[in-house]
Image (tube, rainbow, N blue to C red; front, side, top):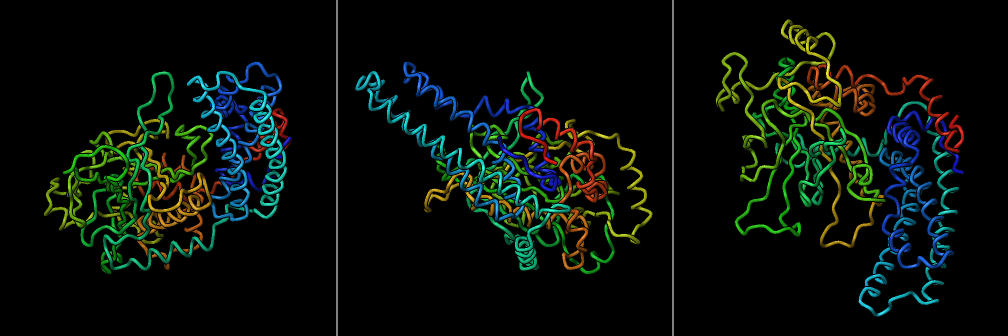
Length: 509
């Protein structure tokens, strides 16, 4: 069987989560979805041939075993490990070959339904058996290759989570080059898909992802100069640093999503594209997933970047607004919903009040505390703790998950599903987004933020960030962001080792 990665690879919290989830569920979820279409077709069309049915069962088993190493390669690839991006491409090519074989069988099934060939002849049976044998041999040669690749990466991946210097440098350049140009894109994905979590089903506590915009553009940009959008976290944290106010520097960023009406859906002639504006200060955590994990496609390993956002209190959801807005306008309709900052003294939320009084933010630097900041911290610590799975209280809003995926360019060659280009684009987007979140929290340019702070910003676990945001906004979020994920107890590794050993994967130690 497949030899699991070393303990060094498990230091990555995403790899640890993927491995432990698969071990505990014993591949039940993957087994229920893998090769469902091809199994049904072969079972119906070749039900009288025992050899084809045997090869079908063997192929299904190989694909189920392949799911775990692919997930591990995915988690390494999104962190800038180019060595495993090549291994990931090879694995995804094998899955695409299986999908092409399934499409061919579907065409034969349609032909049989028309009465042109009611039963498969001997030549069709032999061709199907040869193709199944070829796919099985391809998977047999792929599994040892993936095992060696993951083990090799585990040997050099020592210590805490490693950052990609090239992507970090590129993200920093994108941010620095946009200084002094409000509303100019810092990083832009011209063709993307936007998903939002739906309502929880009656029989389960999970909240499935639903496609909200099948085609849109997503960009990170600075908020317009002199105007900062209302932020849910600003309802708790209300203190600003004196040096940033004196210098006039703005560290407010926003995520701007605009619908592309060329998405193949029906639209009215005078219909305006939907728009969504999210203050980056309200993004609590960033995580990675795939279409299969989000139940957006079976055996589909397209990458998805997950955003956990703290919604403003008094709004039910962050829905795209269809009202045309100027580039510098931060007023949006309710529910879509960017609102002017509420003045702390007068309680008004008029445009005049919001333009004269910018939202204040607590400083995370030592030696800069003020009496107001101390009072704010006391109020924040008095909030009842909320677990990530529990909606936040109405006073501080609730946490909603969104997902971003790349979409194929209409004028370009068809993109390979789950190709390295998609991982590269979304990973660069993640680096820029995390650095913008860091600048917004610290209210300092990147050149004045220490290396340790940057490492902490990339190693923060999603669960800690969400719990922190629900309890006390950005001030508490920063304290939990500084918690390193590498401090996992040795008992967790031992527990995972026993689970994997029972499944026949051997101990990861």
